[in-house]
Amino acid sequence: MKSKAWNEKFMQGVFFIAACASVLAVALICVFLFANGVPAIKEIGFVKFLTGEMWKPNNDIYGILPMIVGSIYVTAGAIIVGVPIGILTSVFMAMYCPKKIYKPLKAATELLAGIPSVVYGFFGLVVLVPWMRDLGRTLKELGLTKSSGNGSSILTASVLLGMMILPTIIGVTESAIRSVPQHYYEGALALGATHERSIFRVIMPAAKSGVIAGIVLGVGRAIGETMAVIMVAGNQARMPAGLLKGVRTLTANIVIEMGYATDLHREALIATGVVLFVFILIINFSVALLNGRSSRE
Amino acid sequence: MSNQTTFSQKLKNYLHHPGSFIMMLLVLLGAIITFAVLIFLIIYILVHGVPYIKPSLFSFTYTSDNASLMPALVNTVTMTLLSLVVAVPLGIFAAIFLVEYAKRGNKFMGIIRLTTETLSGIPSIVYGLFGMLFFVNTLGWGFSLLAGAFTLAIMILPLIMRTTEEALKAVPDTFREGSFGLGAGKLRTVFRIVLPSAIPGILAGIILAIGRIVGETAALMYTAGTVANIPSSVMGSGRTLAVHMYNLASEGLYMDQAYATAVILLILVVGINALSSVIAKRLTKA
Image 1 (cartoon, helix red, strand yellow):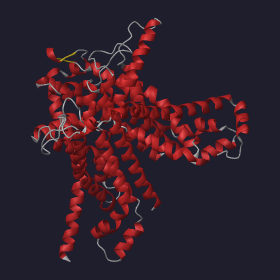
Image 2 (cartoon, helix red, strand yellow):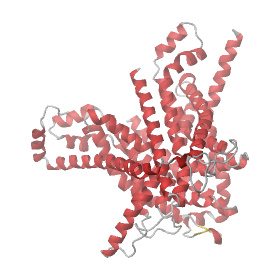
Image 3 (cartoon, helix red, strand yellow):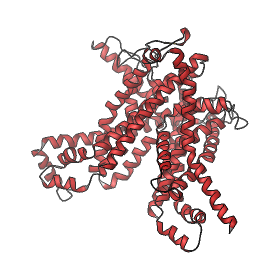
C-alpha cells in the first residue's frame, strides 16, 4: 500500500514537471534572445537601430527600418489579398456549401495549411515571379511605371503570403460564423431578408470578433513567414521604393546573413530577431484579448 | 436553409435583389479562387516534377552530379523520430496534468495556457535563432541533428499538448468514475482507462506534428545545418528534405531536381494529412 501511494505522488510530480516544460521553454527563449540581442541594440543605439534607414554591415551601420517597413508592407499586402478571399471562402463553407462536397473541400483547406512554406516559396519562384516580371514589363510599355522590376517584389511576396494565410483565416472565420446562433439567421429570413442579406448584415456582424481574431492570426503568420518570402521578395536591404521593387523583411534579414555574420553584425541579427519576437508577442496578446472578449460576450 | 425553393424560383428572387445576387457571385468567386489556387499549385508541381523523379535521386550518397534527395529523406526520418521522442511524452504528460490533476481555475493553469499559446505563435525563424543560441552554442552541441530535433520538439510541443488535452477531455467522466468505483487508483485510471480511449485523438495530433517537422526549414538551417549527406551520428550536421529543397531552389543549379523534391515533399505532406484525418474520423465514429 505504501509503495502505491508513493507511486501516485511520484507520477503526479512527473506530470507537473512536464506541464512546466512550456513555461520553461518560453522563459529560456526570452532570456537567450534578449541576453544576446539587447546588448547589440544598446551598442548601436536604440533609436539608431530601429529608425536607421541604412543597413551596411561592412561599415558597421545597422539600421533595420527598411526591414521593419518591408515586413509591414508585405504583411499589409498579404492581408489585402488574403482577407477578402478568405472571408468569402469561409462564408461559402459555412452557408453555401452543399453537404456532399463539404468534406473534400474542408480537407482541401487543411491541405492548404499543411503544404510546407518552401514548397509555396518554390511555387512563387517558378510561377509568380515570372508572371510579375511580365506584368512589370507590360506596365512599363503602357507607360504606367518607370521601371519594370525583375519580378521579385513586394507585390509578389504579398500575393504569395496572401495565399499562405488563407487557411488560417478560413478556419477561424468559419468557426466564428458557425458559432452564431441559428435563430439570428432564421429571424432575419422571417423579416424578409434574403439569404445574402441575412449573412452579411446579421451573421457577420455577430461573428465580428472571431473574424478579427482570424485576421490577427493571419498577420502573425505573415510577419513570421521566412522561407517563402526569401524566395520571392528580392531581399534588397534598402527602403522599399514601390510595389514592383524588391524588399527585405525582418525574417529574411536573419536567415540571409546569419550564415557568415560575426561579432556585432551577428548580434545585430539576433537583435532583429528580438524585434520580430516583440512584434509577435504584441500580436499574440491582442489575439488573447480578442478571444477573451468574445468568450465573455 | 431554403431547400424547398427550386432553382428557377431562386433566380427569380435574385432578380428582385440584385445586391444579394452580386454578393452570392462574390462568395462563389472567393471560394473558386481558393480552391483553384490549391489545385493549380499541386498540378503545376506534379506536372513539372514527376518526369524528373529518377533512380539517381535515390542514391544513398549526395554528389554534385546526382543531387540525391535520399540522404535528406533519411535525415528527415531521423529528425522526426528524435523530435517525437522528446516532445510526445512531455506533451502527453503535460496534458494529463492539465486535464486530470490540476484544479479548475488554478492560477498556474492560466500561466501554462498563456505560455503554450505564446509558443504556438512564435515564428519558426525565432525558434531557429533560439536553437542556435542555446543548443548549438551554449550547450556546445554544434550544428547537429540533435540540436535541430530539440528545437523542433519545443516547436511541436504546444500542438501535441492541445490535441492530447482535447482527446482527454472527450473521454466521458463515467469512465473515470467506473474505474474509481472498481477500486483503481488515479494513476491506474489514467493509464489503463483514460489514455487508451484517447489514443486516436492523440495519434491524429502526433501525425499533424510530423507534418510540421517534415515541412520545417527556417528553424533547422542554423541548428541542424545544411550538410547534404547522412551524418554518422546524431551529433553530426545533416539537412532534412525541406532544407534540401530550399538549397536546391536557391542555388538555382538543380531546378529539375528541385521540382522532383517538391513532388516528394508534397506527396509526404498530403499522405500525412490524409492519415491524420482518417484517424480523427475513426475517433468521431467510436
